[in-house]
Length: 382
Image (tube, rainbow, N blue to C red; front, side, top):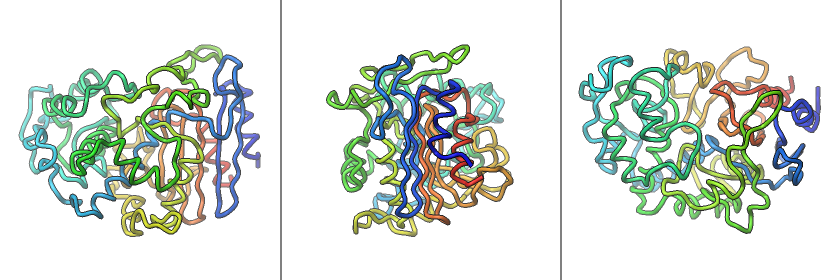
């Protein structure tokens, strides 16, 4: 089996990515490897503390923050969210998923916190992006690839959301992405603090996640990687430079995909989950909350329908959960997710493993690239 360094170097050599950082920890054994450069122009080499736009690796962090507020008694899993999000007090639903956006019926029941955590509130991306009710998610809410400077502030964003119909009735179907952003607004309103402040005080500072946030301060820009999409013949097209969209705090801190971080920082978060919510002798979450986060909550039919994104795997709170499958990288109970900016991170409770790979090339679609699959196969020992 290839070593972790060989996995990374192979993909850098073949032109899949300009560079990458990977961390695989099993118990007290931690293997950190780097390959390639922080940009595609032959500049600084990649380093263990390079900072990346982690995109949807933000989602598990958001879920953990929500569980903290549940433990604080600020809201419960079954509580309707309209108490804090009055914009969603009377949601409308398209009559069928393929109906025009003005062919709507009332929601059969309120949207709950549990609906948001499990991505079953009725908002988000289905496998078919051509459905009429999906278009406003891109055009009006700026869902999709992270673009911090393009999104309206939370109150204005929620006002826009209130005018967009649900694609399915609450609880009926798993839909990707939007629920995490809604959850971020819920967290901020329920705790009475901006989301960045709450995450910093309750998660990042206790865990020592000193390089994680919604923007990169000027003194750290030299460690911030450039962000690309794949061009023709192994070339890379620049999407965002270090002094670009993440160099200042955005109006809308996206709880679905707005964070920057490092391998070491996400490792601290993953290790806390493996320890049942405890870090440095301090309980940030209860074991029960971690179990809820890392347990599959989907029905078999919902798993099948979400296949474009999860490939039939389960979904906990903010991340996928492996179920019994024959994929060479599948490990039942593995919890985590991927980021559209080229990132992936999981914990494997059965083996006490945290596995993280961060690169800087945009995914071409929901299907994870070979770079990630080879990394997962290495972690699974196959």
